[in-house]
Image (cartoon, rainbow, N blue to C red; front, side, top):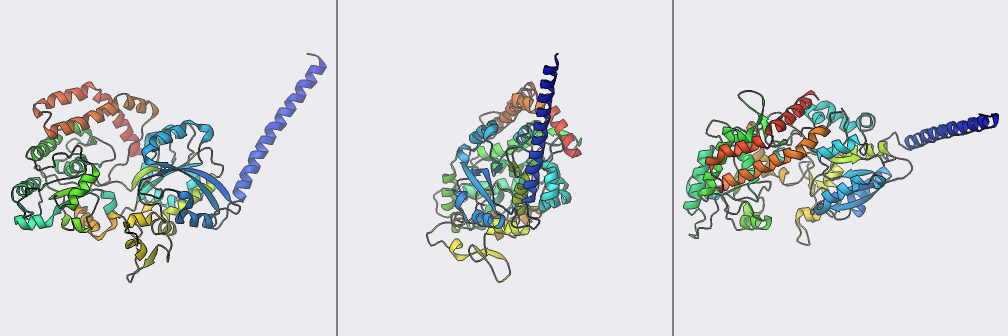
Length: 536
């Protein structure tokens, strides 16, 4: 190589080094500038206005446009952060969420209330689409940091196999039992009185009540319109009764698996004798027309019409029936089953939905964004998020409790409370990054009636209910290949056994079919995930 070429190569090398240094300096400058813009005080979060784009799941019952709603207009003024909301209706949420995640060049700065599945959090966290939040939470999220330190289950629910936390959750205060229980059992008090019966305490007594309700004309009109048990689906009744037959004893977060009480090992309970007893009991109810005939296909509107027409003798649902049409309903206890089991398995962990808020790699202000969302896990933030502004949406009653103002509770336009609330707030529909607290939460679960039945159910709640397990990439591929088919087959056969379209004489064939679907491989995946879960 001649001298001229050597000089040229050296010059090019120097240019490249200088360019690299310049990029590092620019990056450092950007970091410094970004951090310099953060305020030390809680509010405003930033000195100079920051604009961010959020992808937001829009439930049908929530406000249509969060770009102009009281809560976020107020929060913009408090924080100096201008959020541009991309509203995505729930009807197309999964599709548009997937499209959005696949286009890394057009990512939003964050996903808010988008019901991000745990598997997607892990998948896109590994790909770098979602950023790890551990260090950011430690330095910029005092409310979330406190929750993680005080509740090991909370931390376990959010920590992935690589040790990272990628999301802020929708959560519930550990003591807010009503919301953690979910759908609750209700029975018609007037029918009990008409039939001269006490509230059932066992599964057999529940059967006797349903039978009496069908035959005894408790409505007193001779029309025979009584529906002993009705609901918007069969699932809530199954969930209520499972614990009476000794299955799903670690809660509902991980379908079809629990701990075998005899061996203390992980169990696939849909092939257990106890589960078969549950389905035989439910088939008995259904075959004797004690369960609504079209419960496998009933529409929500029909269910509410039946409630309004006072046709139901019992149901399991979230609604506390404070309205006049259902004022006769009172809460039922957990029923004791034939072998003495009496557990309520629907009790959820404090983390109700891990994927409520995620920050993407496109976000140039992650520190400010973490502070923005962390506010809603503290007292002031919960008050703003769930109740709004004093004097505009809420006031304090004589007992010092926060209550919505009269224009919300008694709408001049004849609207429901939630319809009035959504003019100002975005809580209706759920899925949000915050922590539901009975002090501020005002949904159906916080009514006096719902809280009372939750207290009645408390002695029978699952202890240390599991959160969702986390799966490795290869495990997810296998679950996609055969695991989902196993879960789907269990649900399909459950309904067939209950309805009687599949005879229990074919139970062994059902079990064999599951084994042929690679149940052994399915359980190996679950055992590995369970071991990692317990190590977190």
